[in-house]
Amino acid sequence: MTRPEPLRRFDPFRPIDMLTALWSSAAVTPVTTGAAAAYRTLFMTVRRLVVGRRLSVKLDEADLTLTVTEFDSHLDPRGLSVGQLNDVRLAARDIRCNEARFDHATAVLHNVHIRPTAPPVLVAAPVELTLEIPAPVLDDVFRWAAPRLAGAIGADGVARLRLARRPGAGNLEVDAHLDGSTLWLKPRCITFRRTRCPLPARTPAYPVRLPELPHGVQLTGISFAPGVVRLSASVAEWRMDLPLTRLEDILGQLSAVGRPLQLSRLGRLL
Image (cartoon, rainbow, N blue to C red):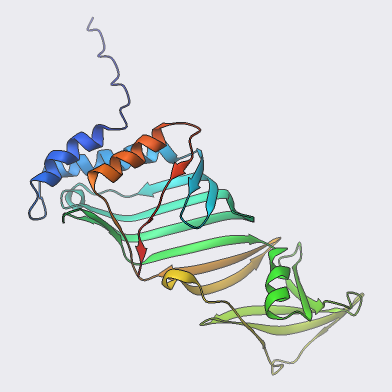
């Protein structure tokens, strides 16, 4: 009977060894099975280090804590041979950013690829983002943008507005849509105690001017669900310089369980 070979011990730095030879000799885009193996090993190593873990990330302007629930891509050997990772999907839950808390977030990075420049650059274009915000945050938005109003999301997933200083004066059920940086709230029904009266379709919408988001992030949609506001946004392009020293540092930090991940200059949004 043949004795089975022992399982290879997980080495988080194995991608570094594979990429060192690849990138040091790559004046042009490499088209080799070795390149495909190196990029696949890098992706699977990062996936193994982050999925299911509670991560603390110290950024330049914020302290971020989250639990990564998804890090996936349909990796294609031919694409990998030229540094193409296709679309990469990230998801996280129980997110805390400084004092703010969010339930769930996703990021879909389209056309992710590594440019074999000096240093190599990781690029994704475009990037689609979604964020679930707890309903009480809606009050904070109106306190800033429309102090006379207060907002809430019911257990039925319906958004309702009322006068902030007269909570017993009834409320408006509203639909919402985005137009650039303006949130339009369209009243569809007025309720007072147990009386509910639909409003005519020509009832004007109420505009709420939203603050400009940094780094070229553009809001693209808003919807409501029980207890949450769902926002979607997009970025034209994201890129990050990826020299081997930085990659080695990131893998080293991820390998140290319980140690906050120190990230600065987390790429550029265009």
